[in-house]
Image (tube, rainbow, N blue to C red; front, side, top):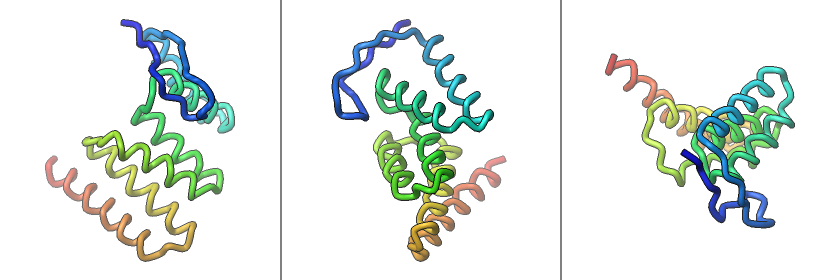
Length: 134
């Protein structure tokens, strides 16, 4: 099944028009993961942004970009990626927990401590509910 990109372009420059199979998209995501493991965060970031430019917003890619920005000392950009991720309305507890954990760390870096505490509490609440279900 081929996936053709739509008008989504996170760079705001032009409409992407690449067609990729599901296997190719999976391979690009695996390449981004490999770059992350090798410590090549700049290459991982470019790969993740390219995937988004091709297929549009993606929960996995947006979450990884938010984490990368935080690790790179750019908490405000991390929060912006999280906002875009939340627009996708993810419903998996694992994703929701990761969002709150990254948010808490980013807000703490920005010294927005009250908001960071709320995000941390929400993270703990999500994790606790997952453990209770098991």
